[in-house]
Length: 88
Image (cartoon, helix red, strand yellow):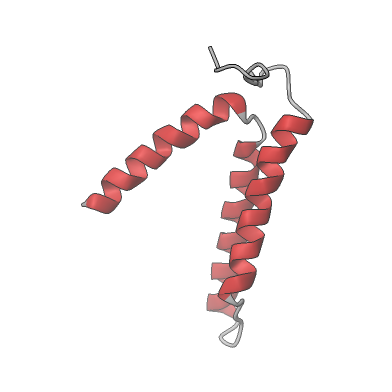
């Protein structure tokens, strides 16, 4: 039951971060696609295995691209906080 509370709070955190990190949603799409393809290949090909280190690197790399991409290439909808100040 604590896992459900953790997931709920994580959802609200991501939802709040999505206002400032406009490319984060695209990064999550690619992460979920990677995990889905990995799971399907694991079922289809019995000897298929990706090491945990590779999974972690891919997921963290995609998250980093989403966050950095939001700061480097902000959309008009992306409301970045002002320099040295707190978001409104």
